[in-house]
Image (cartoon, rainbow, N blue to C red; front, side, top):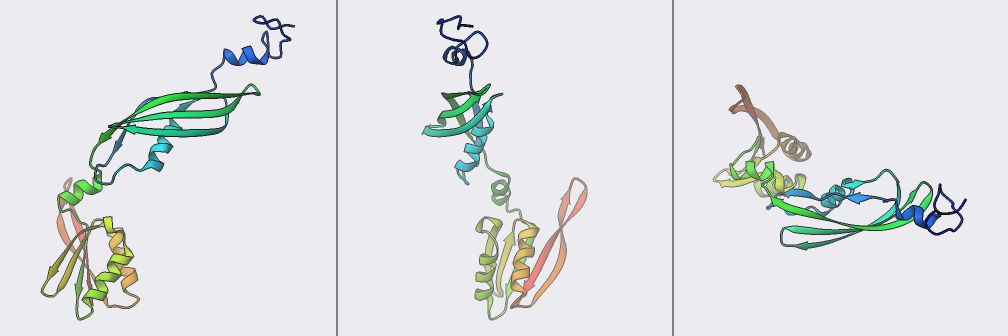
Length: 199
């Protein structure tokens, strides 16, 4: 059997491998919008993962290289991939466009509104050492605010889980007393805040 396009011996159906591959697409790339927090900035690893998810293919992809070029609010994506179509190797390059859109993340929306779920009340003669320990124990982004008062510091924490992690670290050296107070209501249910008094 010979290739119906060039007359050479056919290797796949009615085509030689070259003309078989001409009629088949290894993969396609989809354009999409990427929303990111303008205060956190663009997480390139997350963006690249989203680009990987935009690949459409029913074939086997062996390897790929991705190049990004950002111009204004657009990211020009060039991907070169090597793969197999019915066992025959093929390399293709495709381009796509990512539109960048800014939107504050939930955390920064809450931060801008003064939101917090827990408070660490730093007191006593070692207040500065305690504050340093708090900052070491939790990410900076988890702290809503630090208020210096006459008795020490009030550290407002966005998440209860972060405050609990800090309290656990503080108990190794300091006295920690935990309490709860009503912080308002959400969807008709009472919301409680955790308070940790540390000396």
